[in-house]
Length: 214
Image (cartoon, rainbow, N blue to C red; front, side, top):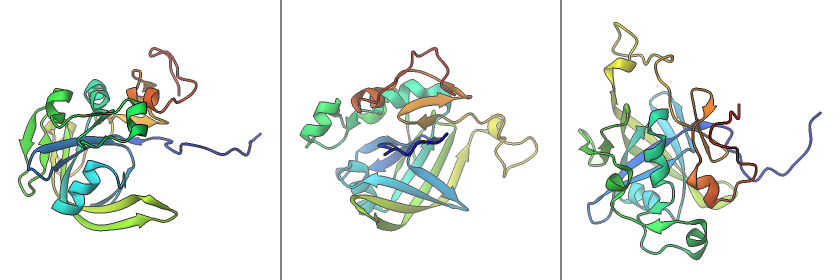
């Protein structure tokens, strides 16, 4: 039997993306998000307008989409409640956010230069997609968010993830992306570890880290 409810969160499960971008002073920014989907050589990113990343994409017109594997859940979680914005809102502070510009150091990740864009890559991420912003469209019915359409101009993929004998296809069996479902981290079909984001957003019904939520 189905029940009609008012869902507060619609994150049914999407890959986590670490968006590399440049701040106004040229420093590197690295921000986790999971509102992304791909079609052809393009990707659409859903970002809040108050975020530093949204400002950077509008100003710089480029970014790198670093895709972490499930093994990098701790690095992603370390970034979950950090913001490069100095003016942290009261709501964000209540959720546990704090100002931090040294995002790569905070996550224990290594900054690499992009080849076609100025935005930074994360060396440890097995997939790194250099992108240019093609369009930025206000989200219908929500003027606090923007849908950024980006075009992938160069892809870096670890060789071990490629289908043997191919330079064009990722092996879906070997690729185990970090997935976020309802603010919790999943990989290989199981819940991986507690999420600071879920704690900050006060998500109900959180399970012990060792339990399965599939």
